[in-house]
Length: 158
Image (cartoon, rainbow, N blue to C red; front, top):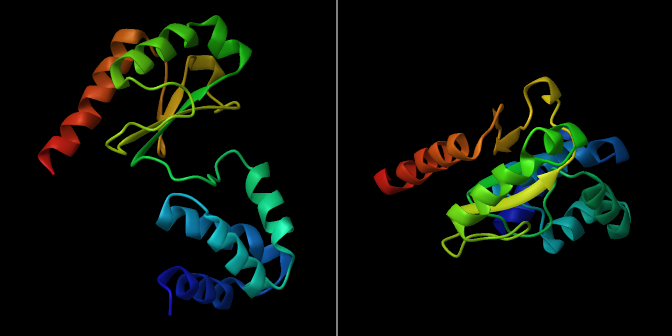
């Protein structure tokens, strides 16, 4: 059996085959695969017995559920007015310059994906970004270059 299909079947057995099981199943697939493919959405719909369009609608509603392949590290830059007022654009330019990608793109080596997202909840320490599940605040172009250099070194060591 296909590994994704096996995973979804296992998750449906764990969480149940009800409409309210949809989000936990989707999040578990994203945690493992880094995104929710069309194939995964169809398989989830089959297991939970709901239309694939409902799975797709739910997946695209949530900003933290990716429906396209992403890099190993997903960088999410807060796009709120508070972060913008406190220098988000300069931070974003520094990231784009360092990684040689624009918003919505992934580096050719598949290590980094750059995205904007709604509020991260760190307005009091803006501008903020997340790299996977790690939050970074009070960013400056210099600080963000140091942070990204650290992630680049991690990959060089592995």
